Length: 349
Ligand SMILES: Nc1ncnc2c1ncn2[C@@H]1O[C@H](COP(=O)(O)OP(=O)(O)OP(=O)(O)O)[C@@H](O)[C@H]1O
Image 1 (tube, rainbow, N blue to C red):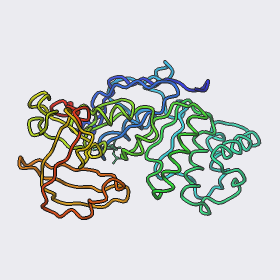
Image 2: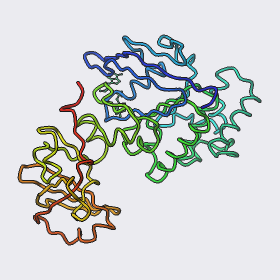
Image 3: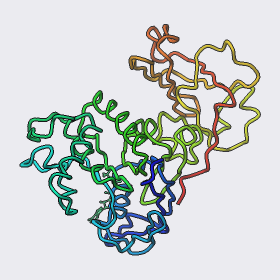
Image 4: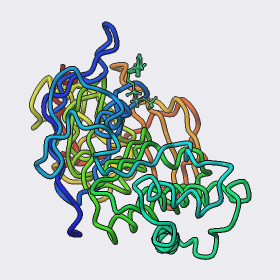
């Protein structure tokens, strides 16, 4: 954690557009130096929350503090926050250094000093020597780096990033996920990152806040949220979740489950081979409705007599026979009681 990183506190923040409540009394504390991701579907309020923090959206009620200072009524340029948007928002008519120097020039930093700081920021994002280039002469990944350099050049206390990688192709996107995380770790600046990509959220974050309908449905470390989602919404938004009533599951393990609860089992926690399963065994019996080869795994869809659908993800190196399975075949899939997670009945309202 660097000396510049500060904690953020969001208390009962509310924002409506007409009758539509975009932020429904959001309360959230972010530790100094933390990397927190807001994850949620389109329209869940992620950008509105970020913009309220940046000062571009005015909440009707609630408060925001950064490092203990109340910033709720402070204009954006007084908040000392670095912002990176989806579409880079670079000035196309300025050079790379012109773009990176811009926030410093706005703050009245002298030209020579600004140039020096811009060079240092460009070096941080591995763009040393690119200063004189035109923005138009850069690749998407390089432009995103310029946007990052521009956001860090004035040593902000907080960084806000709104889907900064969504315009990039998959490989570059994955590479940049690590680069951004590394930059965060080097600078130690408190970061709030917005995405609707659950894998990106799991990869990058210290904690993830899952949002739906203007509310935080769950907040926690990536592994905890993935393993122990509290409700159906979070379970289904994070990975392949099979959800069924506990009374619809079979095997000796199922007999020891609480009754009439919603049970969640991740697709990758099923196996087709019973070897190694004992008295904790939980079974699902169903007909193969469809199958798909996805490179590292096979995805099998079973339909049970009770009408439940189960997706099984069978590792390709263990599922050599999956290719031969005929649609309509009855299959028995196995997991352990320890892999069954019980949900609260519904999403938090
Ligand atoms: N200026 C506005 N006027 C009216 N409604 C708005 C305005 N800005 C946002 N909204 C509405 O508020 C809700 C939340 O929007 P927001 O942009 O915060 O969602 P999001 O989770 O960031 O979505 P996305 O992933 O699509 O960017 C949406 O239903 C949106 O239509």
